[in-house]
Length: 199
Ligand SMILES: Nc1nc2c(ncn2[C@@H]2O[C@H](COP(=O)(O)OP(=O)(O)OP(=O)(O)O)[C@@H](O)[C@H]2O)c(=O)[nH]1
Image 1 (cartoon, rainbow, N blue to C red):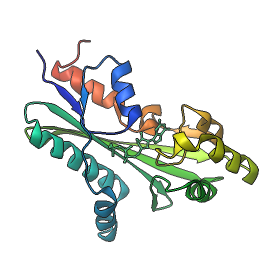
Image 2 (image 1 turned 90 degrees about the vertical axis):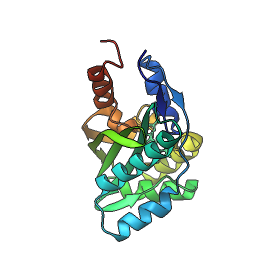
Image 3 (image 1 turned 120 degrees about the horizontal axis):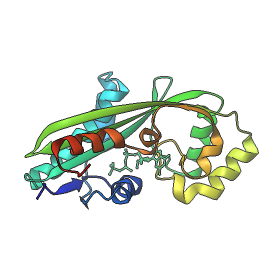
Image 4 (image 1 turned 60 degrees about the vertical axis):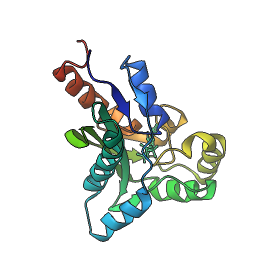
C-alpha cells in the first residue's frame, strides 16, 4: 500500500487534475498568511520563483507536520509582469485594471509544487511559462470580466486558460499545466518513479 497523498491546496483545478488522473488523494487546505509572507520576501528582493517555491513549501510543511506519514503536496503560483508580482483580483475593477496592464504584453507564470514527508521537503519543482496577451479592446475586456467574474476571481492572472481565457492569448511558451497552476507532469513523474503510481 503506497503512502496516502494529501493536496494542501484550496485550488479546485489542482484537485481536479489529480482526480481526473485517477490519483487517490485527500485535500486539506493549509491556511498561511500568503500576502504577509509574499510582502516580506518582496522586501528582501527574492526572485518570483523563490517566492512561489517558499509559499508552496510552507503550505506543504504545515499539513505534513499534522500528517507525517503522508506525502503532502503544497503548491503556489505567482504572476510576474516585468518584475511586478500580481495577485488574485480583489474586485471586478481590480481584474479590469490588471488585465489592462497585461494586454498587448508578455508575462510569466511561475507554478511551484513541493512534496513534504515527515514535515520535511523531499521533492520540489517550479514550472515557468511565458504568455503573450492580445491587445484586447476595452469593451471586450470589460465584457470578459463581467461574464467570467465568478470564475476568474480565483485565478492569479484574472483568466482561466481552459475557459474563455484562451481568447486572450496570441502565444504561450511552456507547459499547459503550469498555466493551470501546478507542475503536474513533473509531479506525476516523481510519484511514478517512487512507485506510488502504477505505470
Ligand atoms: N482553472 C485555472 N486556474 C488558474 C489558471 N491560472 C491560475 N489559476 C489559479 O490561480 C490560483 C493561484 O493562486 P495560489 O495562491 O497559487 O493558489 P490558491 O488557489 O490560493 O490555493 P492554495 O494552494 O490553497 O493557496 C491557483 O488556484 C491556480 O490554479 C487557469 O488558467 N485556470
